[in-house]
Image (tube, rainbow, N blue to C red):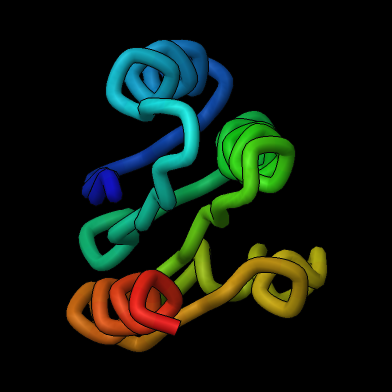
Length: 105
């Protein structure tokens, strides 16, 4: 399992850096938990990074999880329906507990 905390703004000027980081950190079969509690802005390029990770995870039997989104990023996730397609949690702790529960079942 990998927990990736994203802070500040993610837009076209830095989304490639986030994508590169996700690719470096994530191992095949890893669930990825995105902690969005400190994320203040997310545009479509940042959303693309989250969805690309989710697609990769699904391809190898794991999931990408979103947690603690609020403000503008939470609105974008809701408007686009992403919060209904990916597992979403109020806190990182809830996401970790959900991942661990899948490992024991």
